[in-house]
Image 1 (cartoon, rainbow, N blue to C red):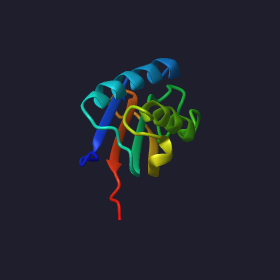
Image 2: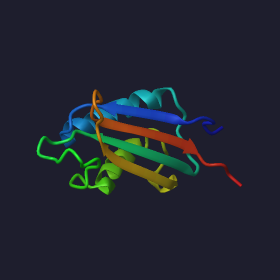
Image 3: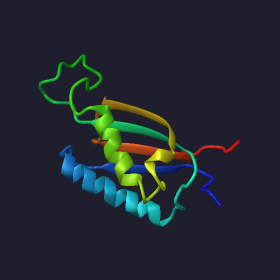
Length: 119
């Protein structure tokens, strides 16, 4: 049977893409060990918490500069394909936001997956 609850993956680490991607893959593999592969339609929600550069104005709440949100989403979808979801073509709903880390927070990504109800 399909997974009935949501799967939540949280990856924290460096803002450097390669290191972050490796950390995401590592966390996804850990989560995948205790969850069934989703083979039907899937909903994915992503929140990217990015470090705020010292050069950014204090009033800027969101990182409206690189990295592009679609590239960040692609990194996550590539990491969860074959580990948490059968194929990224199974994603029928995708929601993503990127924001600066709040005081005391750490850079990273929060990923939530839900199997969609079959009609």
